[in-house]
Amino acid sequence: QVQLVESGGGLVQPGGSLRLSCAASGVIFGIYTMGWYRQALGKPRELVAVIGGGGRTNYADSVKGRFTISRDNAKDTLYLQMNNLKPEDTAVYYCNGQYFPNNYWGQGTQVTVSS
Image (tube, rainbow, N blue to C red):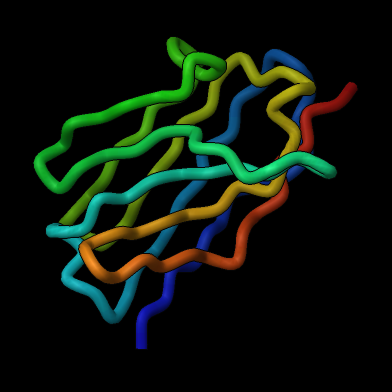
């Protein structure tokens, strides 16, 4: 049974930092393209960052220079380091794993940026 379990969300002030984690089980983690998506209230889900099995990364323009995606294949874990957070980063953040034809999602973790 495949599971992606996110953790690390919470309430943070503008300018603060959070680190999200996604623990994977039931998959050969190292071959999967892993990503973080987010969905703000009333808006569609959007890509935040993605990392391939070989480590190549891609970021949404809105988070470039502030967020860093990384993976530890030995621990089957995906990370998202978020710095200089802004109120517009407030959303539910979802972990995603893809290896054709499989596409898996975590349950999401809430990130709220507010003073």
